[in-house]
Image (cartoon, rainbow, N blue to C red; front, side, top):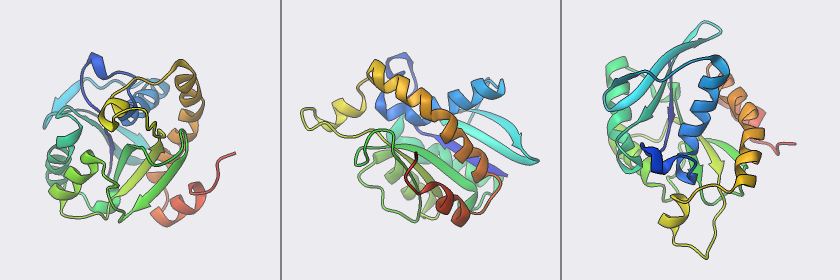
Length: 188
């Protein structure tokens, strides 16, 4: 079984904010596959699906970003998951908008959601899909990540979600090494 975690903050006021790109990608995948996050457990919305026979659990923690690790830990313990079977989808301030990178055993880069996951799982050995949101030095970091995407940014994101959904599917089917070799190159 694979666990896919989209990071974000719950509630209407956080829709289309930069910090919620993990939620947004999972919502795109659900729309594409005709799935709904109808159930809640361990303070997260969740659903099960399959990718070529592999059982996949998608979750959106409802604990707010900085406490995401508490939720992830409950699912990991309950389903007895190994770190390599976990994919965390996160925003990244230090990468250009729309750029992606898949990492394992990597530092949090100051991302509080990732720090909390590391603290709760006591490992960095899970897989992360980092999606660049850029950085604007005119704004305080908190205000920037909780700010809304512009209309142009939303259009561009919608154009790359299909590519990102392919990464999610491949995570369920191929080794982490092959996944990184395939996608950690410049996207055309």
